[in-house]
Image 1 (cartoon, rainbow, N blue to C red):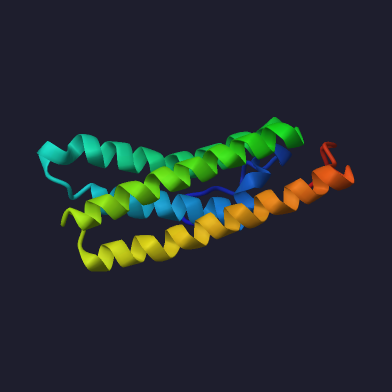
Image 2 (cartoon, rainbow, N blue to C red):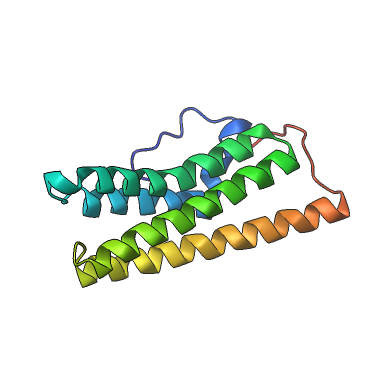
Length: 141
């Protein structure tokens, strides 16, 4: 992955292997590029939108690093909320004519992917919770 280093690995950084985290980071990068073009009078809107996109990957990482299933699920649900916030942001900006159609469609495609990956991860972890087979022991990568 661009910009990352494999020289510093440990179990607490395992979230970097998650496709949903990788795609959420890509969504943040895309949001930064698209909203970074906004004029000065819309910088607050742009900054809030970029932060909503960034919040997705940050909450996935924080939940993973908590190591407890209940906390992990809580942070994944917060990430899902940030997904909704970001969708509302870029959709309304597109409707207001502030985001070009091509940029909107690019964001819509990746956002949809991230949102569904997140929903699948949450569902999978909820099944683990019901079965009681959540392993919190640190293991070698």
